[in-house]
Amino acid sequence: MVKRQITKLRRFADSERAAVALEYGLIAAAMAVAIIAGMPAVSSGVTDTFGRIAAAFTP
Image 1 (cartoon, rainbow, N blue to C red):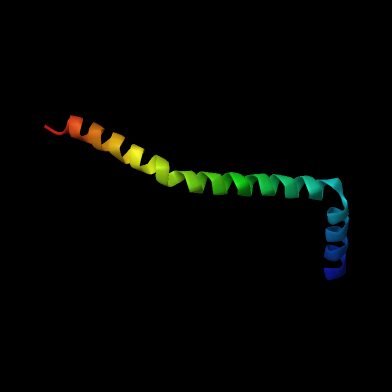
Image 2 (cartoon, one colour; image 1 turned 180 degrees about the vertical axis):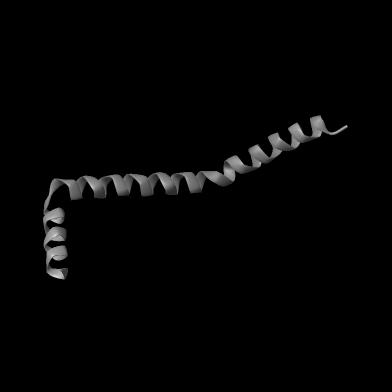
């Protein structure tokens, strides 16, 4: 059972699909870092906007 899994893993690692999967993983990680890094700049603007909207509905 374990030997069969190792064989499948080696075949996958040698295939082009593994390289493509790794590239997509790296792209997703880079996007996540960029989004997380940009959140502080956006959050204050969103907070202010929703504060003004809430104030407009307050009698």
